[in-house]
Image 1: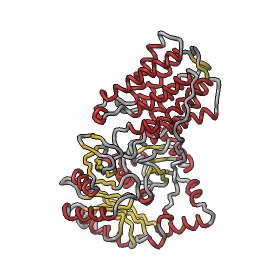
Image 2 (image 1 turned 45 degrees about the horizontal axis):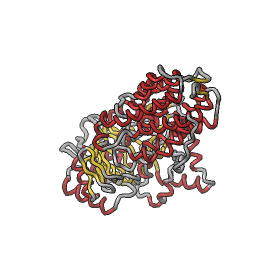
Image 3 (image 1 turned 180 degrees about the vertical axis):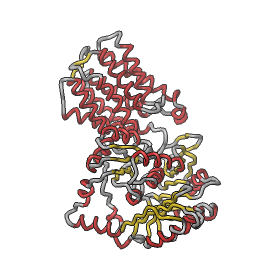
Image 4 (image 1 turned 30 degrees about the vertical axis):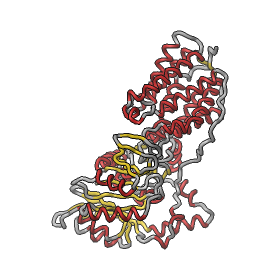
Length: 552
């Protein structure tokens, strides 16, 4: 029987819970509903829990309240992905309830589980039942009930685990997509595995390592190695050019499609966005003056910007040759306003930087940056204001958590895809206030529809689509709309799903694993079947997703 838990025993529970989760991370990953190669719930929870464990191992205390603070801080900073953030919030509330105690009894132990659930539910804007939250709540309710009957923490934890596993088995009845795919909730499974480790520690058992540690190297890559990808002389269009034109009376009538076609003659990486009063343009060109002269046909030029990309490239190479200090210069660069974009692929990162992003964090699909990764970038920039573009739904919560704990005035634009991030950045104005920028950038997301092509990692059926392992899949936002062994047919199906009679332009971001022949076939097929829709192509070099699309 264990009637009291002190800091030393709680630390052992954390260590065994983290080890048990590490052993089962792959299993938890395999329970992700969508059979995409970025199913990473287990990975994210494991890295989050490991961060908490390492913090505890570095700062052991007999006082359970002090140890709880250390554990909570470690989880907070190491939280990755939505599952990791929720896990950190569960134990944030749990640990907060311990603060005043040197040791706790069974009743206080149960109350801490309940406090954790209350904190986590408050942190989630729209809690979904049939997830880790449900499992945590049902387990906490069971704890409160059992604590009325026993003073034994082992008996209490045994009952908590039992009820957590019952709740986990019920998650498919609460979340239809789980039942369709035939799995329980992955986050709930991860939590049950942690609780199992807690119980083993209370019993004096040790969880042996059964899996190699995952690589936890920082995902932050502020100084993207663009110069290693290209040579200065390979830059065809050397001037990153931006302008805004306010339409004027007695000027040429603006037609968006004609404007795009004309602008495309000046270079590549063309982006055009407009409303009834203004058109904003971004293009890489050799003739910035010709771009501006063309824009003046439509009205008054109100904002102009030209950057020599060849000179920027030479400076990076020069700094590297003078002692490899390019990365250091980037790290210590200070800005008044930091615009931080989470990106995947050098091409996408280069595009983000050319549009005004000041700092990049490498992440996105296969690995999510932690709260600490984002916090460090903001702190290193010494900025007064920060704008964070997560560009992935699974990075949104970590971004919001980072924004809450930094000293800078920070906001998060809820971008859930790379195309949304591009649209948001296109509406960023560095001279405007955070509030105005946020309103404008968030509004721009409504006009973007995102699609992607990747491959399946297992056989399944979801959203009525039969999917075979290694087949290609087309996704519109988060919904799988088509799967086919033929990549070209999959892309065609995606485009047909995304384009409607109002579509004017489709942007295609080509990934690192894309087939040049397929890309060429897509261009020819678009020209033949959708001659009125402009195809704007970018080399994103992103992993996992062969193609990313957006339609406007």
